[in-house]
Amino acid sequence: MVARQDQTTDPELLAALLQARRGTAFFARKLNELSDGELDGDSLLPGWTRRHITAHVGYNARAIARLVEWAATGLETPMYASTAVRDHEIDFGATLSPIALRHLFDHSAVHLNVEWRDLPGDAWHHKVRTIQGREVPATETVWMRTREVWMHAVDLDNGASFADIPAPVLERLLADITGAWKTRGTDAGLVVEVSDRGLSFGDTTSDTSTLVSGPLAAVVEWAAGRGSGGVTATGPGAAATNGKVPAAPKWI
Image (cartoon, rainbow, N blue to C red; front, top):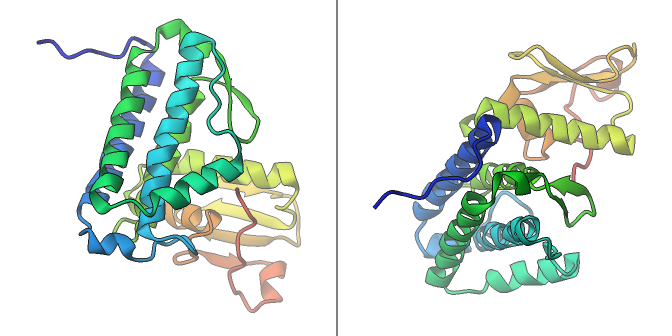
């Protein structure tokens, strides 16, 4: 029996889908390495156990699948009824038995993958709306899922690091994060420099900025609020704190 293929033939979209699927497989591997008892352990996100991370990633797949269904049918199917409903869902999912929690992740990932696979090429351009209220084409759902699975695989605190995340994913994450700072105006006096990529973000014309620099993986880890190992702070702003790396502005 011949395996069913993605209906889209867009090479860029197919490459993006592959990156999302690889991230899903990576998350699955880090999850499956954990024993049932270890699911009760803390994650890297304050207040969340590994159970919360797994529930969130599982329900996130279902929510994104609803957006893909919206694009396919034209019938509005929001990600969540509200952020309160989403939060309640995660808290409930964290109470599931280990086998049910693992099935939630597995089955929801398969469901989303099927929705992506069967979405006709033209429907990928249909508009849907995120939980934040942004109106985006269905193609954006692939990136939405990509960043969730790669980052939360690290958040499971089971040996994965930002260095395991592919460079194209890290670069887009950093663009997203710094873009959010700029939109909110929270990046004033801050310049971010990626030493191994020749990338700079922020007000590079200022003479009084704090410069936070380091290799790509370390900079994204810092920008995402996951730690400051591997980055340094220099410049007039850093001098006031004896070179201590400042906390990154809030992202989401």
